[in-house]
Length: 191
Image (tube, rainbow, N blue to C red; front, side, top):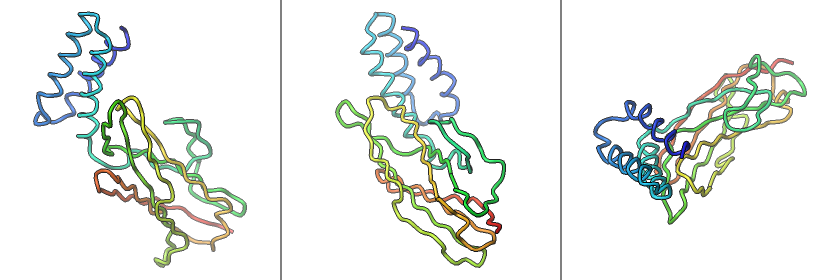
């Protein structure tokens, strides 16, 4: 019961961010869920809340919320950011990425996402040093529409590249929506 009431409260904090054109449908679903909570019909309340979450998640702009070099990670939002972006011999480049606004589809009792990531490292002269299309593919099903996920990249012995400044080009592809989003992050290799 507390979980359902907490979800309803969260909606009232999220709702002001959503454009009013995304409708009264979300509000109606939340109110319907509240009605079912009061009647003690928790399963029905969760069904309506999940519908509202799906509408909210699918109206969020597609992009990358977080991209940072890390020393380590231990789950969603749990990472240790590296002190700098300079790498030397034997170093491993680790990158943490949180995509947002990807399309979620309802398939029966499941919610599905299909996102891929391309990676490209370019030197200061524009020459490609490393490139992978669909390097990471997330084709997952969940029982809830609230699907936060993250991607990590790891390149061992990054300093095998020549000394210099580099750009790590990240492309996140939303395969259900047919959209992509690019973001760059700079790093340096010193010998």
